[in-house]
Image (tube, rainbow, N blue to C red; front, side):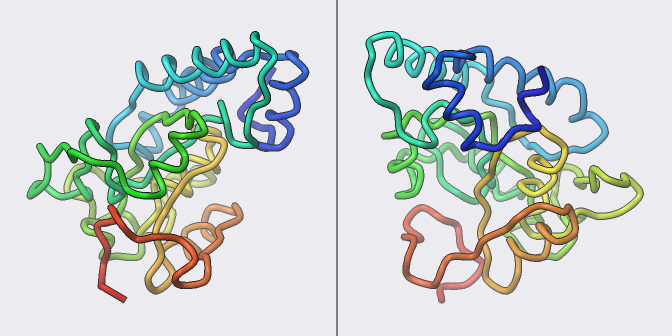
Length: 209
């Protein structure tokens, strides 16, 4: 079953109905990453152990008959300019290649409270300054539909991960199009929330406003 082709809503319903387990879903996505990542380059780091440990927590919760939140147990990618406690946040720069945040961004605190299954940190243009994800200090990201083309940027890793089935959904950041433009290049939906609706605490922002 190609679980990576289903929506977060569909997968939530399947988890609740016990048609699949969170561990099965997570392993399905990790297998897809193993299959596609060498050609796409959507990720800077894969957090395999963290993802599987979280999935086990969700399965235990379901087994106890507890309700789960809509995104609980759903595997996703996190743009690597969003601080993740205990997991490197490099902003695709050699300047921060060994930076491990001692705290989570607010958005991560909220998602972790719902047992977010973080598959890994997604590639971007260095410090989110670019429109093609060719300007990462580590490697470029390719467009999943045609690897001779760019996925857009700066959240190109996030968009490419979703488009290639390497994540069900992903977080990005957007100052002047960095979510919307790569979403359009990769044929996925990208939403920039109204400014102020989502806390920027823990985001290594392109600019301060």
